[in-house]
Image 1 (cartoon, rainbow, N blue to C red):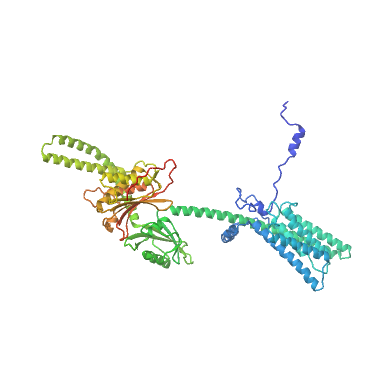
Image 2 (tube, rainbow, N blue to C red):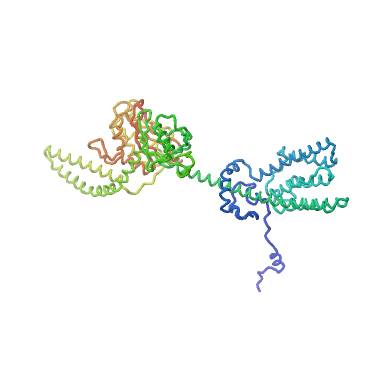
Length: 637
């Protein structure tokens, strides 16, 4: 026989053990909105629902309640108090008011000759002092939570509901039938118990009061009163108190559910708003939300950058009217609100800035309401995009297939070029006359030119992308400028053609160092080619736009690029030089797009000496402590 089985007495005790039932609380505590404002993990699906309104989540009621929540959710959550605290405070205020009214009624009755018993007056005064003290003095008022009022012996329950029951029954017992009737006051403790305590305690409170009324009615019968009248009055009063207790509990449960739903809805709305804000902030397309009065309610960084020639415009909200450069945009918005419709493909709007520079934007307008609605449109959403970007994207799609074919052709050209170069080298060894040597040099120069074209084509051909790394752009810009100046034999100093403005502290960006070096060298070569020999004719500037972007600008004092040339700057195989490949700026743009950067050209105001500016806006990233470069290359300006 096995000895592992427990004795029979222990098995019987274990069989009689039942898990303790959780303490029942008020509706607010049971639904999790009493002391904690967060939603419980299981929500309120397991909480007891109203027996008189079991279909409160029906479709017919959902729409009405959703409208209620949309109006009241922010008010409920923004008040800083839970529904339990607000209702408890209202009861405390009501008790203080009732206490003052009782003292006033005793005084008025005494003036008009109907003096109540001395003991009843003392009870009224004592009740008024206690209730008024709890209302005025926060230290006297106990810290109440749903769990505290769920116990009969708690100080909070005894100081409120218990005191009310005792005082009001005592007043009813002390007052003769011909004087004031205090039975109606018993509604307050029953109502308070029905709202703030569990249903069983609320019904128990109504039961105690009903039994006390019946006992006083029986005492009145003993003193000579009419049995039927007294007992009927007591019974009806007790039945009414039971009804009040049940209805108060149901209304409290509904309020608790509404508050819980409102808090959950507002939290979901906050999360959705944060998600929408994050998506809009990261969009490359500009987004403006404009109302009928011409006030910009919201604007993402891309839109703020398109509205000005440099940097970002002011953060929303700001008025769209009053800026001369935006007059065409203002007219378009007015037209959109007036017509109530806008072409799906959008319209082009030209912004003319004070510096004389222009920018053509593709404007698409979308309204916040459906057009079949009779309501007036109050808000519209503007989608802005630089026409040059639109055209470049269109051309990029057309050139995608061509690029793959060009990469294949370039790869096949390498082998014949190598053979031509080797054969030309052998011929150069045997060249004896000046004309023969000149011909071999011509072949060598053209072979090198073809090699550079092949290398450029292969550079932008689709291939394996490098992982971006966090680099110190301050140190890299200084190093590249110094090496480039030595390569082109450009002296550095106070009167140097090159001037470099970089911050003293390191700035981290996401980019590949070799690719960024190639971009900067290409921009410096172009700037030097079109600049004069004056001091500061070529200027390199590194600036931190905000916490997300850092901008490297290369400026020159050459003639501004004409608009008919500007639109083709970043196209492949477009060059203003007869011997240029037309791939330099195109490669720069391709490299920048790989790392989430943006390269563009703009004309500076006429008052500035360096009007041509190519800039690269890169994504910022904090530098790791071990990767921060300590050395700085000091360049004289």
